Amino acid sequence: MKPTVLVATTSRWFPTARLAVALANAGCTIEAVCPPGHPITKTGVVSRTFTYRGLAPLRSLEHAITATNPVLIVSGDDLATWHLHCLYLAKKQLRDRGAAICSLIERSLGSPQHYPVVGDRAAFMQLSKEEGVLIPHTITISNSAELNPCLAQIGFPAVLKANGTSGGTGVRVVQNLEEAAGAVKFLEAPPLLARAAKRAIFDRDRTLVLPALQRKRSKVTAQGFVRGREATSALACWKGTVLASLHFEVLQKSHASGHSTVLRRIEHPEMAAAAETMVRRLELSGLHGFDFMLEADSRAAYLIEINPRATQVGHLSFGPGHDLPSALVSAVTDLPVSAAPKISDNDTIALFPQEWLRDPASPFLRSGYHDVPWDEPALLRACTRERDSGAVFGWLQRFLRKR
Image 1: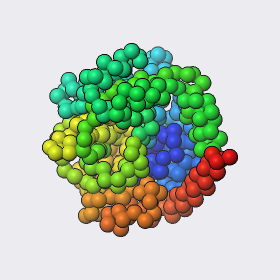
Image 2: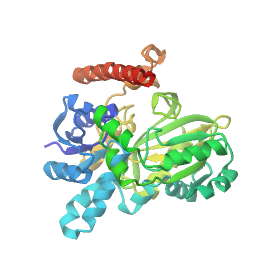
Image 3: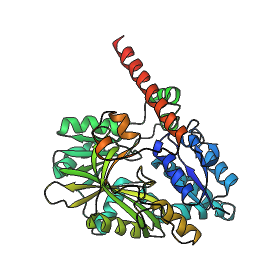
């Protein structure tokens, strides 16, 4: 009987659907808890889906877990991971009555004693420094009075980051104190009700509604700017050990602070060593990612943050030791690893639909390996419709701004 894996996601992020297919190909039965209309429902691999409700996230997750009884939960985004951390804490207080769910979350994500560090950018960077990992100078800005002295230590340009954000939405690069003051005010503020309402109505995304109502402010950290190229590592981990890994440098992004759309696979011992160090220190299990800056001249790898969930390259396979889903399934089931074939000998990967959505005429779609899921035609059609509807909505927004 195939093991059941529950994919948990709060956003309609296309790579989560690709990951579900890869996990199914690794020998799993896939079930999912996700928002209505998620691309994962367009794949042919998901047995059942359960609705993620932004106003009742923990109940949504608990219902799906109870109904599926999975051997593992795979988180598709940062918010889903944070909800699982909160569910762990809630069930821990129930002692025996919550033991089964606590055990499942710990098996899926790793040691719960490190959940607070995983969810706090400044705490993670401090721990990385203690472990001897190369990082940029990082300081938490607790209040506006600390802004000037903090940035006097770091210098300009500086990178400001808000906790609880991902995909570049909570990151600002500032060149002076005036820009920094405005950025901090924006980053630490709770989502506006109008923005939460727009997301809920037009994007069918209710994840901002609760934070907007609670008016909870975010913690902001300041980080030294490293000139160079961004890079990322994706890892399958089990009880603090790296099972399989992929390392890439970023060639193209959706926008300056957005997600990657084109990457080149690289071998970088310093990145691998830093990732292994933090996986061991945090006793991680499941799928995780680490982001780096490769310094322009030296190519030294500065660790800049952790992604406590599957990243958008997690479905890619480059053979034994570089197939994350197969390695993770093997660890959970104690069965031999059966890695998927290497997807391509071309190390430049144009992610689909990310690069195609960014620029349908991109030269990378021809020069690199274009990662199109030809074996999932319904998923391809859904992506095409998303691009068309996105274009219409963008036109509508521009029209309304002119009124």
